[in-house]
Length: 311
Image (tube, rainbow, N blue to C red):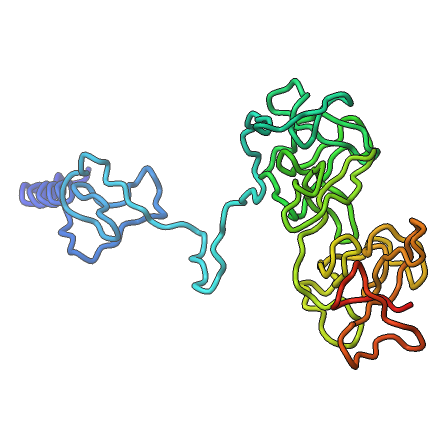
């Protein structure tokens, strides 16, 4: 039979057990929180909480001690472009009620009057014509209304539903300069610095482009027009008036025309024989000593003392 332990041995064992059971480590300020911890073990020893990067003595604060420990997403490079939300460059705009032109004598015998903007029943509709010349009453495209001479967009071309984004009183026409807003007119009085001579279809007229000072003679000198695609044209309607525009049909010398834009730049549309049929002829200067016509004579256009045509 084994001998019983002595009282001294029992006292030693009891002391060791009590020390182990009550052991509480003293933590300095350099013990890091265990962020990749086992939830059953805790981030810090008993009596401490994670206060950022290191364990701090005391209970967890009332706010829970939430700490942003970072993410796996790398920080953006300082030269990286800033991410922007997409922006609608042509957002829809609220429709407004189209008001008739005050004091305008309307003719609605064909359905509506595009000059006076009368005859349409819908408040937001504008009176216009489609590419076939038929009058239309439709709501403009819901984008920013385009002004005179601005590039424009057409919807439902050649149909009764044709519309565009030009402001009321204007119509979007496809021309040699792509598509632009033209102003409806009845007489030249409706067209400041222009003439009511362009056919929008069905006999409905719009104002020609406004007059500018430029060089209509093909003599190697700059035309003075703002765009390379434009030519300087001499008006056959108004004496000494010049316009910058794109050629409509670009016909050569002696080809039939209605407007000078039906001819190549450097030519003018003129009724040479006075028969009512016009042809394209080279523009020339009436200045003394000018030699723009080779083998022909420079004849005045519309009584001009400045410009003529070679004949």
